[in-house]
Image (cartoon, rainbow over all chains, first blue to last red; front, side, top):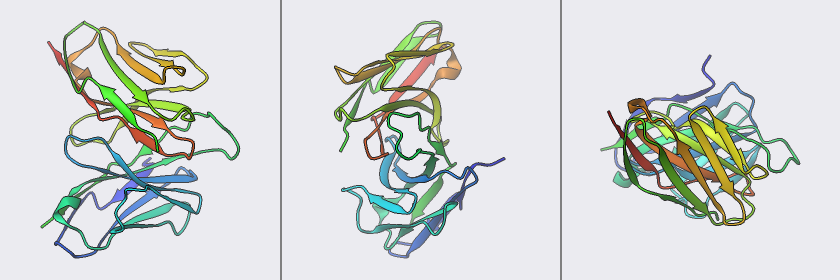
Length: 118
Length: 111
């Protein structure tokens, strides 16, 4: 019954050691998002994929990369995690019909991956 | 990009009273405005949303109003209950399918 799945739920990595977070979806949605949420803050959009088109936010550090090998999967790679990258990482999906403006494109969130950097 | 502001940052109300949270946005092309409830350690949960061609929407105790001209939208919760206590986020979807979140409101309903 799970719709947006994130693995692992908890990840501990060492300072500077690359880490990959995984997101998969069973909804066949064409848009997938990655957010970073630090304690007591709002989710901050890092980037999103519209189908295969990658859209980076202007203030997303180069340390963060993403891959979407197919419709179902999306990965977040943190090349050299710093202590400031410790956060909850949320994946979300939505279906945006082509050519439709103003539609209701609800986001479905995964449970998140809590990243700790030691 | 879009800039979403949200007020107040904290709100305490007595059980049974109403709560109102307000947001403004900057991008006139934004066309979809969801509200999320987030409990500690959990994912954001959509509670109500509104499209840009609608001025008001209601779902039981929750309502959202949108003023496109002024670029602000508000969440209204009536007859608040202790289980309504959580952090609430507004968001706006920009013209490029991105969602931008407000800074959040921590709502406490006092029994």
